[in-house]
Structures are given as structure tokens and as C-alpha cells.
Image (cartoon, rainbow, N blue to C red; front, side, top):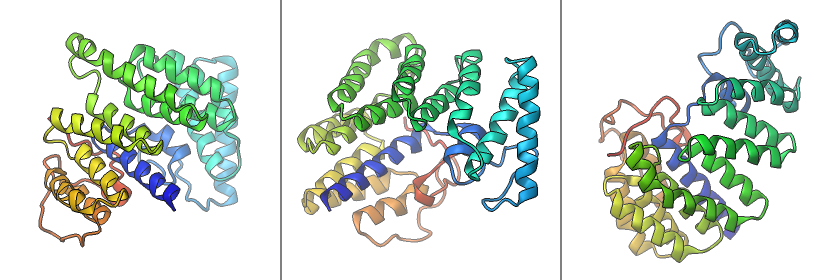
Length: 301
């Protein structure tokens, strides 16, 4: 039961991090790792129960793009088309993730400043049983963009899956240590609060609750209008049975959060959501299903 509670906290905290930094990887990532197809995928959009004709058409598309790539291995249009067809086939059980690794490697090399290709490459490598390759791909992104939050989260998760929590903590602490200088050179390049949230999540998963609360307190002090560290601390306190101290933090997190997150916070607190009282968030209506906010990126000052 404790493991389940800890896992649930980890999931929600990851979603909190994602919610306000944005995790829109575009149609490629959505096509493979998201059960809902992206609206921006061109031409064919098979349903989760695609019929034989649709699958055959996707296979024909993939073969056609593959023939182009044999002649022009760096043709980006063909690479993207091949990947989109392959991703949908994989979702339908008609392909293997390893088939997309090399095309993704090529795309990431052709577009080194577009981290989404490298992240998807790393995820595909890990899924295909190549964790070392995945780690290298994440680190390659972080060499160019030390604050790339999805790469940091991905590498952290990979290290934790290898039972290397101290390596994960060291990665995040080193990034935080480098943040002031990096942000002075390029303002906003490292989101310290989001990294503190990931670090707190690691501490919590290791049952190092005092350290988790300490890092959340620091984040609250430095980002007083950000609901995420307040919610994170409240959830840790609730897990420890300290409901009296957690309740005002849940209330504060609810007040600070954009409209699309208020109901979810109240549910975590064990409160009954109050309907239709908050209006729209400053950035428009946020998607609330599972706290996923693809396409909605409210900004914390």
C-alpha cells in the first residue's frame, strides 16, 4: 500500500511539472506514446481499431517512404512520413519500436536544436532494451540545453529504473547549481522550480521525506505564486498522516492554481470539487483530464 501511495504521488508530481512547462512533442511523440492520436497528423488517422484496409494503407505508406530514404537517407519529409506511419502501425500492434530508432537518430542529428526528436529517440531506445543508448541520447540533449526539462525528467527516470537514485539526485543538484550562471547568460534557460520539483519527487520516492519537504520549502520561497511546490508539500504531509498541516497547503495550492487544475487538487486533498466558481485561467481553458495539458501552457511568474 505504501508503494502504491508513493507511486501515485510521483505520478501527480510529474504531471504538475509537465503542466506548467509544456510537454507538447507534436504528432511524432503523441503517435507512439500517447493513446490519443494528435490532431495534427496528416492524411491518415486510423482509429484504435483500424481495419485491414487502413493498416494496409499505412504499411504501403511506410514502404514508400522507406524506398525514398534508401535513395535520400536525410530526406526529412520522408523521415517524418515514415515515422508517423510506423508509429501508428506500432500502436496497432503491427510494428516494433526498434524500427524507428535509426530514423529518429537521423532526424535528431539533422535537427540538434529540436529536443523532441532526441527525447523520442531516447524513449524508443529505452523501450527497445537499450538503456545505455537512451542515457547517451538524453545527455546529448542536456549538453546543448542543460535545462531541457523533459530530458532531465527522462534521464532521472532512467537512472531510477536502474536503481541509481544518487546519480539521479546528483544530476538534478548539478543542474540547479549551474542554473544561476546559465540564467544570467540566457534568462529562463533553466526552470529551477521545475527541477526542484523533480528532485523532491526523487527524495519522496526514496522515502527521504525531510529532504523532499526542504526542497519544496525552498521552491515555495523562491516561487511564491507557483502552486506546484505547495501541492507537492501538501501531498507529502498527507501521505505521512499530517492532515492538519496539509489541509491549508491544499487550500493555498487551489487558490494559486489555474482553473484547469483546481478540481484535481481538491480531489487529492479529499475535498469535494466546487463546480463553476473559478472561471477561466489567464491563458484560457486548460484541459483537466488526468491533469494533462498538451497545448496549454500557463506561465508562472
